[in-house]
Length: 454
Image 1 (tube, one colour):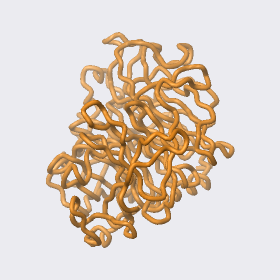
Image 2 (cartoon, one colour; image 1 turned 30 degrees about the horizontal axis):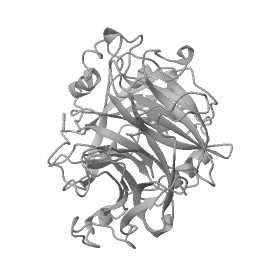
Image 3 (cartoon, one colour; image 1 turned 60 degrees about the vertical axis):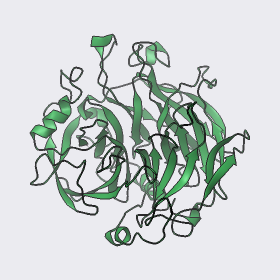
């Protein structure tokens, strides 16, 4: 596939990937014990970084995060602050990815705005729907100071842009987590994916990628070898999908949408009763109509087509990321106690693969509703929590131990904190960027990564 810049993407995949939880590692979890976690906790020297304590921001002096010893952070890109294009930073920061554009670090950040028909965050002329308030902003960050240089609206007129994912060709796919549309007053139908090039210097002209399905989208992950796009669905009954483009790297040219099924076990339910490390052989079933006319009235119209073909059901699939020839997926409410599952899909060939349950939360104290995720440069997973009470960034090591990496100290009036979102590493692997959704805030975190799994 000559249209891919393979060398650059594979390099970045190694920096942002290379994670594979093996059978031996997950079986031998009992490296350490913790009074809260019990066995399976990764302490300092075993993948974790040790206790976390409140730390002041380098550039503002505010105490907004707890981090391990030796780590620091800057804060920028806050809601309602003026951007370089003269507009105010939109709220509801969500999914995000980092790109190298001619030596610049560029972040493309989603805004999960779900207002009724209102107004777009950009110019109506460059908005998909001038009454839809979601979209993306692009932030250029100084790689040395880790402070904001410039920012602007890069996608306008979309709706409920929750997550998405980076592509091998240096674009961001932003996904709409809704199927509402004209019947409630919008000028366009919603429920699609949109592509934003990292090198753009302003707002892109939006093109809905309708062949990728109209459903309650969450995140995507792209296999750099095949160009296949994997897509998650954020519903209590959700499917895991893949889009096989007719022309890899040119998603708007059309393709085929499919739903994951467990081979010889039609309509398999992954939500409860699962065995960690069990290899579940996978097949894929075609979605006959990825853009059904009744999607606005029935947001599960695509899912139901997959179920009719024997597809599998998941609980609220949210973040996904590609690394080490695998797709890693968070099920936010999956598991026997409903606190979350972490899945791995390993493609074997064009039509088969293996699905593995890597981790299931035994309690909210261990992992509470994992949402966005990313694969780290040092073979671990960063898991963004979206639960109740205190909210953490958790790390999951290649040996299967979990640990706290950061805590959000920006609290609501009742003492609870809002979700982390959009975790992503810089192209050189030295900075972790992450958002807090409300009030919209972006952080750049750095420190002695080499001491642990992240």
